[in-house]
Image 1: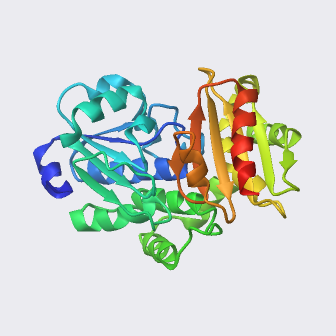
Image 2: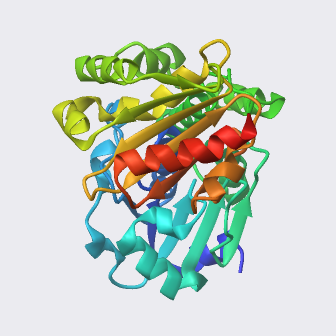
Image 3: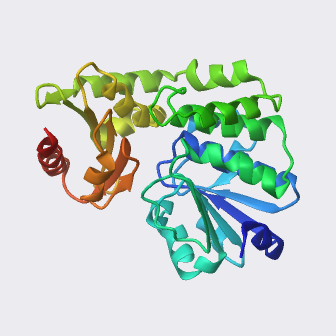
Length: 316
């Protein structure tokens, strides 16, 4: 059954994305969720983890909920920018795995597990927000400036302001199409890139203090303990950008970010210039893209650092 047919079948739609949401996840749920709501659907925007505060100026930001009670009853679930249902969080995972016939999966990760009844997966796309405008058009959904701005934000953040190697001519074409929808491009860029919270800067400093080089400078890694993150809780959203920043150091081929979470597990983020880090992440049960991937390890931070570095060093 197609997405259009499923939308006719359900009156309530849950739009969701992965844990530890990034810019593409936020842009996807804010843009597509708002478009569906403008079209008259009852829409719930759900995230297991807290939404990225960088997007707090979007009018639908307060609509995002983390209350698992939203999954009660019959609803269509649209999972955006999520390669594996386990990345949705345990509450959503339970519903998705037991009711795949009412799950739509829209994503751009090469490691996607095709867990929906309808799977729209485009690995060559720079971001899920690059895929959604065409789906939006095909469904005949209404546009406004905030829908277009959300999609644009997802694309520009997932491509590193159109600097990363995942950027293509299609990325620019879609961004141009969105800019013509009338949102304030200068304001959006200023909000996304020119208004950094103080805690974000302080947390960034903490990361640089832990910066370590291996393999003659080809590997660079940083780490965060749970205590550090909680001390600068308002700067937590900067974490995802640090691995990309470190990758940009001359001579570095792979950057790795180790992050201790509240439950004691370790989130590992990989960024690469040339080496397939999706392959490395997969060895630890993770995945993503060739040059940007991640995994979660249930072990002490020191052990995670040791095991991951041992695997990465095999490439040099």
